[in-house]
Each structure stands twice: as structure tokens, then as C-alpha cells.
Length: 176
Image (cartoon, rainbow, N blue to C red; front, side):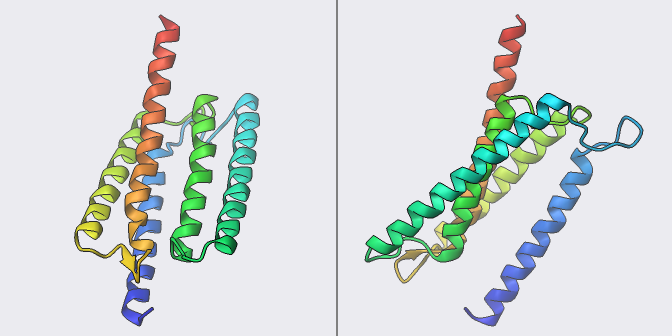
């Protein structure tokens, strides 16, 4: 990997972290005497189960990927992409479980802001992913590379957005 590509990746990660900090500042409101992210006992238990499911999902993914690496003669993904896919799958399992158990949002959190942020993140990443595909930058020597991560990240956030929307509809129907 050349130096300019490494610097661009580091700059992208730094910008991403700054963006996450800004989004957290906007979505995590301070209410109830300045306490952030206050969860009740039921939510804490559900979040623990969600973390456990996400962890075991990652373990299984890593095992399957490792076995495919042993038995396959051709590499499908570069290592960064492969590990990022595993993290995204595990996080999606955890987050979706927490959404269904109503343990994703804290008691003092504003879901509307999070929904808007997730939708904007999804759309921005999907757009970047489409640009990378149209520029022909997603393959290196016939192997899918890390440049597809934006598209996958967009789908990841869109999946969360859809899960939140479906859960909201289900809750609305149950109230009627």
C-alpha cells in the first residue's frame, strides 16, 4: 500500500471519528440532571443479551471465514474488508436485537434525531460506495477490497433504520 493511500485512509478514519463525536453530541441529549444514557434494569439485561449474541455471531463468522481461507484456493476479500464485514454483521445482530427488545434507546434519548442521523449516514455511505463502484476501485487483482466498505456501511445503517421503522409500526399497531 502506498503512502498516499495510507494517509487518505487515516484521514478518512479521523473524519469518521469526528463525525461520530458530532452525531453523539447531537443525539445524546442531557436530561434528568445531566445524566446521559440512563437505562432501566430490563434494558440493561436485554443489552447484555444483545452483546452476547453479537459476540457469538462474530466468533462464528471468524470461524467460517478462517475455514474458508484454509479450504479455498482463491481469496474473496482483502483482510480489512473481511474483518469489517464480521464487525458489521455482529453489530447488526446486537443492535437489531436491542431494537426489538426496546433496549436500544436510553430512557432520556430522542429517537427521532437518531433516525435522521442514521438515514443521512446510510445515504452518504451508499453514495460514496456507488462512486467507488463506478470508478472501478473496488477490486484489486480480482479481490474485493476495502473500497466497498462505504456501500456495506450504508446498507448496515439502512438496515438499522428499517428495523427501527418496523419496530415503531409494530408498537403503533399493538397500542391500537
